[in-house]
Image 1 (cartoon, rainbow, N blue to C red):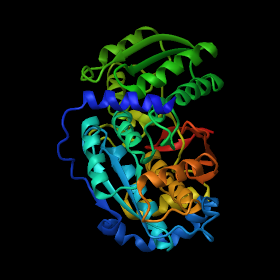
Image 2 (cartoon, rainbow, N blue to C red):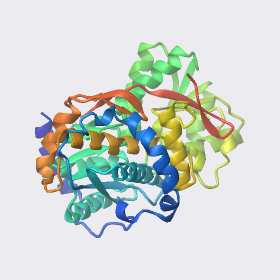
Image 3 (cartoon, rainbow, N blue to C red):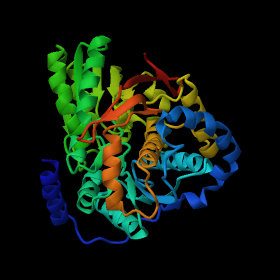
Length: 420
């Protein structure tokens, strides 16, 4: 069924895309690490032994594997544009993992990352550039709409694709070779409604979502159904589109007038800052609850982060967690990039380590063609367990969906704090 849908989507994408131009130039290689990363090499290497040991029940087969040489992994995401926070976090997380893995010896990874500006056509251009480079495995793209376009191409070419954060269920429906390490949108919608109900966070729920976006509308559809099952009362359903989001004051006002004491925001952080700013302006102070799309809200230039105090969101990663694995990762990331990692960085880090586990266990070598590597990784991912930053005992079913548990965090004093 996935194969049939793959062909259909591939044809549809081809018909809707204009001719490919040159891809954006946000290209990096692990062979030429950034100055900041190089300067932090000692700190990263010191943390590496502990971090990789924890990530790797992941590498149980490493001692006996015949995996060898250097495998080329391509990455794609928005390094510029309105959601660049996501893409740069993913790029950094992937680079850090590759650096640690390569320091161990054995199977090596070369990473090349392309900018797609959160644009589907540019993402396909980036994919084609990486394919010309000799990409054998794809770690990306980052956001849902570009990933849907690229997944159709990857399925057609039979290149294994593992996205860190494109969460629409349609992504993994594209082909048997397409997998996610993030939660699917339906899971986020259901989990959000369950968490709000179980913690009695609100009695009257308002919702503001992007009806033109697969990520946002996918989450809301499942949230609405689960909210009804949990006897949550949705008193205001307000939508906007990608072409009509310059002013969201009307949506906020509708939620306020309906008496919503919690507003659910299954949207990206850029629109969320506008909503929080206007709510503050009109004296509206409900609880705000979102999903992983809100991660990055504290890094928006010009936004008063005090307005995000108390905002809650579901995420698979909290940088303040006390486990050794998380602490080592956060320490290495801060040393390399002078910033605190968000969940996109953690998901990306897990993408590389899970691929490393699968390639090592499957004895992947550098001389293999991409199409020959794909069935090896499909077999490994659907049979292995992976312990990473964003979950322990992670497994994948044949659809490419991951099984792991979400965490809830709240913004306190300008940082994420666990709610559990």
